[in-house]
Length: 226
Image (cartoon, rainbow, N blue to C red; front, side, top):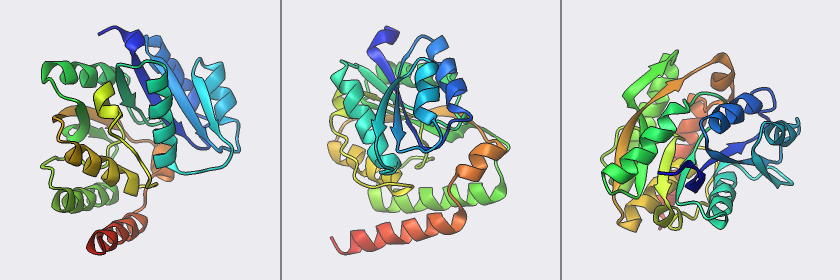
């Protein structure tokens, strides 16, 4: 797969201290990078642009789901054959991008979903593991997908798969929404082992247990009223 047909989409909000390093690593591997600066107040967009990313800017903060949707649509407009979503806080490994892209081809799939539970995690606290396990249990119950990691931002998709995604939810809720849309699409998906490197920085910005439970309960209530 030629790397110029693969775009890496990064949704970023107030990541000025780390985004340049993330973009530089992805660019060094030979991929095109689109960073959606989601209304940051700290120069995130300028740092990403200086590091070599194409930056699309939201004038106000709309949330991660909206930022990812903007990034996916931008990559499609640039002719992307493959899109990989990648976190801007430095916890993902660039080497996993190629693994996701290869899995799409090898399995003739339209979605490759990264799984830290099939792969590895470094410095993951117990509370974060509990949060993720609860989220996985709930999402598997409501979406009906037998997968091991339902809230991993590292995902690959073909052009056909990306065109089926229409995100409207934000925060943790968008991760469940994208899986629901994958399930509804009827297109093939596979899980791919990936590694998550937790740092003090990424943990401080991540979802807290109480916030996650609130979001999960809200999602459950919405599904009951459909």
